[in-house]
Amino acid sequence: MKKYIITFFMAILLSIGINAQELTCADFQTGKFYIPTTEELKKFTIIKNDSVQEFTLNLDSIVTNTVVIRKKGTQMEWINGIGNEQPFHEIIEWIDDCTYRLTYDESKMELDEMKKWTNDNNGIVVSKRRIEKNCMFYNATMTTNSGETISQNGVICKE
Image 1 (cartoon, rainbow, N blue to C red):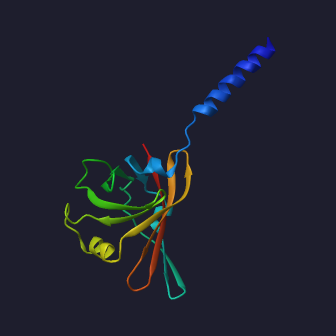
Image 2: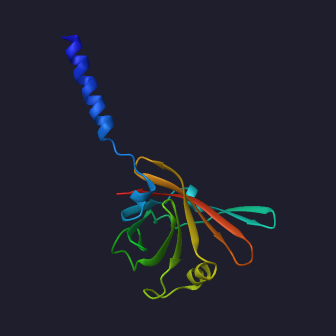
Image 3: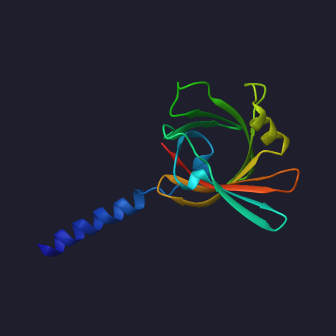
């Protein structure tokens, strides 16, 4: 009897392992996602002329996450959920399966000075650091026209 019980549990464990889905970068190219506001997301590093500066952004404490909907080549972002204010419209240029460039879509929204500056400096390049469960940990980097490199780590999770 013990032999049958052990065999039964082994079969269940094997089927769970076989059916468990490992996410890849391709799973983060389209769909609905969220970006939780983490302590890591608030930290930035600026490198210029071999000097390194770090600073922490004071994000409003009521910002808990950002909802992202991606379609091929585009992305819309809402702070604290769909329906809260107007979304940001962005263009995604895929460099490879795990790396893409984000710029703001001025044909779909009016750009403030920061968004114009981001576009003028060739946007933000986002690259995968690792994937855990349903989340991709990333590094977002922008190299400015004046030679500064600004980077930030974050996480985006598939719903």
